[in-house]
Length: 285
Image (cartoon, rainbow, N blue to C red; front, top):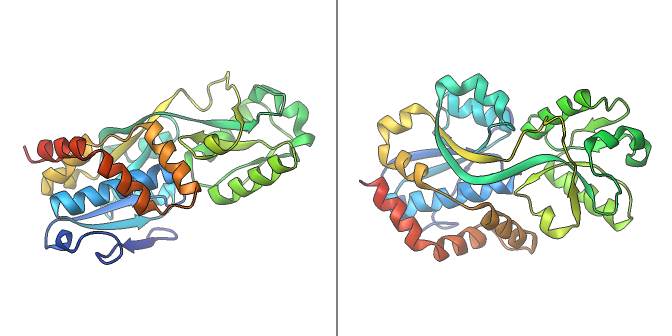
């Protein structure tokens, strides 16, 4: 049984054309709603599947661990939010024999710790000596996420004995960051790219000489093997999808300006119809 499982079935009146609801393949996409990087790619995939393959799409919003467990257990068909090879390494190693990785949907990801540009530090190694200036804490996000798992490892690897990791949420982390910057307070946060805060604030990624967080990575589409057997066109389409990291961050900025997810993803789809047409054609081959 998944924790905090939240099913979101998007109806035609709210999101997609009525013709897309014609009887067809049912596809269940799992994602973490609080991560716009995965949210956007997932909504783009959902719209393409509905409009071009006439699938019935169910979106399953949950957390990182349950998301992986849902796809591995067949309770979801796919996720476009698999941060590899480092961030979600623990989940991939646990479930890889039950999954198929279709490759990256977005490349060039990064994760680690970051501080505002006015903080005169450059490396994770320097944090312990200034722990009091940071209020003896690292401001984190949801507990089960890869960046939180890696940060607990970083605390050990760098001997950050006087810094505790605060578990909160991505939204709460954004609020604390905004308040700290407004007051010029020192703050260290768990961070990653793509993420809209890089466009909103002057932030500095801290060097990770011990490579706890790994090198630049990618966000992959991972599916349950049954999807390839039962719905090969869907699997082929998902394997074709590519959303560049620059596009993801640009869409996140638009979200920060108050635009809705369907506005933002709809605009991206409209601007890439030729490319999407090639994906659909390849899926039907």
